[in-house]
Length: 79
Image (spheres, rainbow, N blue to C red):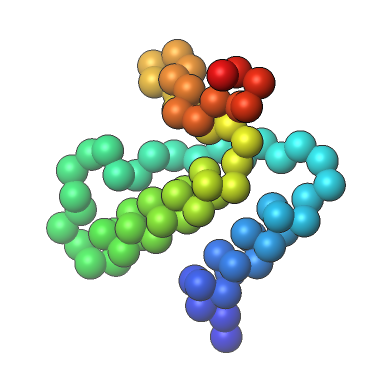
């Protein structure tokens, strides 16, 4: 049986070895009320940690707010 860490590492490895452009879309789980349920809180924590790892690898990170792109991490050519 694989655990969350194994799946997360497989994704990170795949992103590191990707030959072309990769666009990932995910929901932000850490900007609202902290869930009371242990399982829901764990999901939010795991998703947040995964987002941080992916953002560290990414060339660019954009947060969409009400349909407006907010650049969190610009590409090096945007500086």
